[in-house]
Image: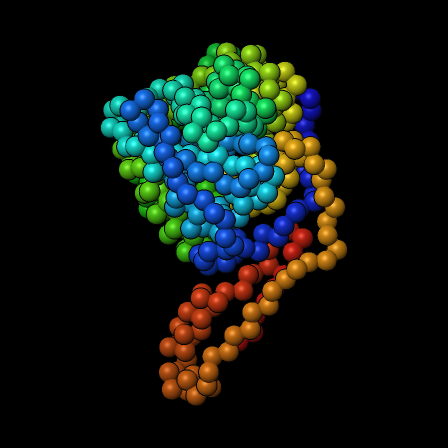
Length: 368
C-alpha cells in the first residue's frame, strides 16, 4: 500500500451538490441506449455513456438497475461526471435489472460475474478499460484484473471487500449469524424504502427520494432473489487473487457508513502491490448524494492523471422566481389550513434547495 490520503487533502469540489435537493426531473441531456451483450445463451444489459478516449467499466454488482437509475438526478449527475473523463460502460448483472432474469436457485457463483465484464467490454468494442467497482462488484473486478491483466488499465475499488465472513486470519469479517440476520433484514425490507435512512443518512427524511429508492430496489429484483444473492455474496473470498493483481489500484473507502468497516479497505490496499488507499468522510453507503465531488475527483485524478482543480471564485447559478396569482384572495377563500397545503404543494413542485451541507455552494432560501 502506497499510503492513505485523508479528507483534508480532498477539499476541491468540482461541482455543487445543489441538484441532490431537487425534485425528480430530467437534468441535461446525455444520449445513451441500452443494448445487450451475449454471454452464452443469456443477455447482459449494458449502456455506453460519453465518447472520451479512455474506457471505464462502472459496475455496482447485483445492486444496479441501469434504466431506472437515470430517473434520479443524483445518480444521473454522478454518471454524467464520470463520462466527463471516460467513456463509461455500465451494466446490470444477470438476474437483476434489465438483464435476463434467472431463477433464484440458479444464480451463478460470484466468480462468474467476471465473465460479464468481459462480455460487455467485447460488446462495447473496448480492448482495455479501467474497472470502477463498488460494493459487491469488487471481488469480481479483482478476479478480472488478476486473470485478464492485459485488458485492465486501472482498478478502482469503492466501498468493497474481498470477503464478507470472518475467518481465522480474517477477523474483520461478519460472523455467519450476523450475515444470516442481515440477509433476513434486507429481504423483509426490500422494495419498501424502510432502510433508506440507514443507507443514506444525508437524505434522511426525504420522503420523495425514499419512495423512489423503494421503486429502484423493486426494479433490481424481488426479495427472494436478493436473499439468494446475499447468500452467494457471503461465500465470496477473493483474498488469494490480490497478490496477482498488477494493475494500478485505488481503494476508496468511507469508514463511517456502518456497512463496510475501514479494515476491509485496508486489507485490500495492504495486499495489492502499490495500491493506494483514500479515506473519505461521509456516512452514506454510496456517493450519489453526500460529497459526490470528492469521490469523483480522486477517481478522475487516478485514472487520467488530472491535477485537482482549485475551488472556483465564480459560480454559474440560476434563480427561479414564482408567484401564486391572487395569493391574498386565494388564502382568504381557502383558510389557513388549506392554504398551507397549497403552499406545501407549491414548494414541492418548485423547490429551492435548502443549504447544502459540506459543500462550497452558498445556501439558498425562498420567501412566499
